[in-house]
Length: 95
Image (cartoon, rainbow, N blue to C red; front, side, top):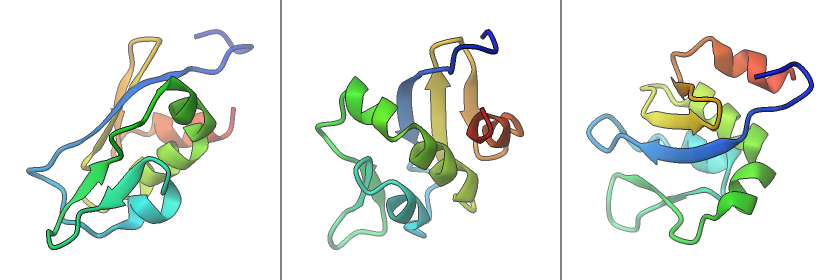
């Protein structure tokens, strides 16, 4: 990744075996994450497209950072795969 180009999000996923449904991600990026009625789970909206991911770049990064169990995984177009424990997430917010 060059300094003049921001990375793009290719994919966001939630590790359902780790997610404890704190719903912090939904608060940060409601266009991407939603609660499932009657379940202790958070899911991705079904209709997420590339434009929604890029429009919500910073909210998705903030959601991953605030997840207390690091259940959110982000894959960037430069090959990086990050989760809430990745120190790089804070750097991405400052670019």
